[in-house]
Length: 337
Image (cartoon, rainbow, N blue to C red; front, side, top):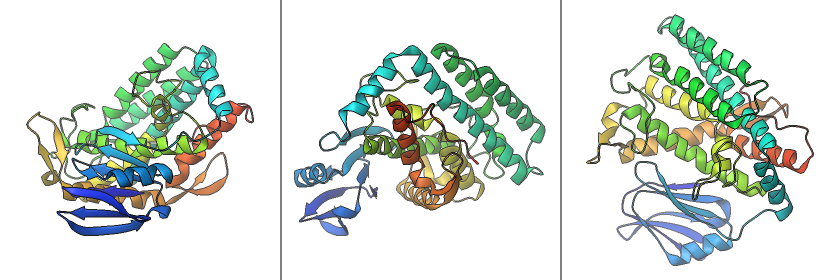
């Protein structure tokens, strides 16, 4: 994957190579065959030749605003077999199957959110308000029990909302450094109104891109979801699958970057619209940490083998496709070991 973050970059191609130029000077040259996607941040250009080459080689070309908002994506012919997608559409039209899958996604999200809180208590128990975090952890445990037999989508969404409120209400307590610069009053976006929300939104954008690519690679339609229902331009299934990865892949990484002072408040600025943006240096640092994180390995609880974190979205997309085909009795969400 290639991330292009330098302002005024122009991405083109020469033969089978992707070339990045800034003010006419070549800064990077990469063979296209080693890439599966290119993500461009901020206002920059891409040549028609590159767009055609990416479409031919099945390399997605995405454009994201400087604040981390997804703008658009170019890709070649739709991949995957039509039979799998038909099964996906049938399941999405079935309220019970949709609720079963939605319940799995949200159960994993709540369990993994609770794991983030428990991990903070283990790592920083002498520096944080353990009692308050314990209470939030107990509330999340109660929400997992409420989900056990629930097959109503609206009720599932309500449980998820309550759990998210309990989780984010104590996220500030997990910070042991730079509390003032990264204090978060509530979860907000479009635009994010504080530094922590800006950092989280940016990481969520990176995560969503990876999950959407994983779904497409196994032949699923990322725009037809089960929890997130159809809305023009919204990748509902990608947002569904993203739920189980948010806590550990994005939230925990954000907290780690702040606690280790790898990012600082100086790397964020308020735009004229009132939203907060990261500067170019901070954006590059976060992307580097994201890529490094994806190289780490964890043991997959269902597959019972070590998997690079960067391949977890693909592993879950594959398991979801197997369930939809009827090869599995249920979808096994990823529960952080």
